[in-house]
Image (cartoon, rainbow, N blue to C red; front, side):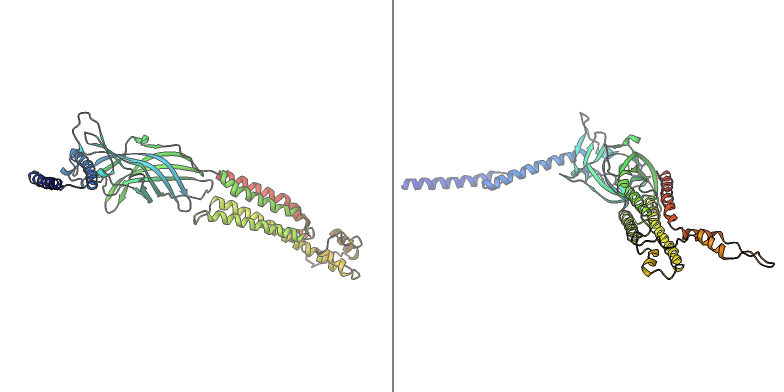
Length: 460
């Protein structure tokens, strides 16, 4: 057992001496690590190798040798920057906020000789957003933009492609979503056509430093098949212009113009057809007996309140503009027809009451109160026998007056007065109030039909 202990002690002392000898002889001495630390160190080596590859790319492009805070060709002529756009979708169009939201692919093309690199195969190199932050890129922004962002799922959607001669494709991929202002004119709403545009411009470089242009002319704007719920897209077209700022000068500006024509069928179902039905429903009162006061009044009030609800609902979904829209003209004209049908019955009821009050005054005193009240509409005709009451018509009254009165010839100095035609016509209407309903049954539909013909010929 002493031999075993002695051997173990010898081995331990020998290993300690060898470790110290190795540490002394090693040019970069480092302590031995436990297995867990060795695995961590292995991961760090992998990270360092990735970093070394990025450093090699930066060395290839000589990024550290140049000042990329300055644009390419600084001090010379304006740098041409080509642009092309592919519109993926129009996500929403808001009439209340007067804006639209669009998702698109935006690409820039320019040449930077500072990034030229030797290549035997003449193949380009593609990089992600990490290298983009270290070089110069155009500072293009969206004019009149309310909100915009670059998609970053699963990572920031930016791609940089560099060719050996220094030509650069800088693509904001996958997508940019931008919400921009669109000045809409609602004077013909909902039979309107809207012209909207998305505008691109350099923020810092005016036309003397940077020249924006469409890379392939009209073919620089491409669109997928876009379907909107409320609009037809009639046209997509790129254009070019200049914008002037008093403090900094002229800037190149690119336009993405598109024309939207609104679907009318939705508003026909939600607004126009219900309005037409309410107007037609108000005409039903012309066929109801003029003495049926509760029926005609309740029908008129119901149609008026329904029209008010429709007008309020349409106004709530529209911006508060200071001019009259086409739908306002139709709704308020229809409301006027409904309101006039209520006024028509008020006139009929009034003239009927006046006529029957006159008859009541000419009645003999022998009639009791119940029979007399039949003339002012409080009782139905079948409840009281009116056959015993004397029929009093304008013709019989005129005959009685002609028999009982002696017509004398006008003497000298007597002036003849002619009865006014308007007063005579009004007296005729008051004595024949039932005719107002008869004329209204024809005049109201004809007038509303004429209004619809004029309205749809003007706006459709």
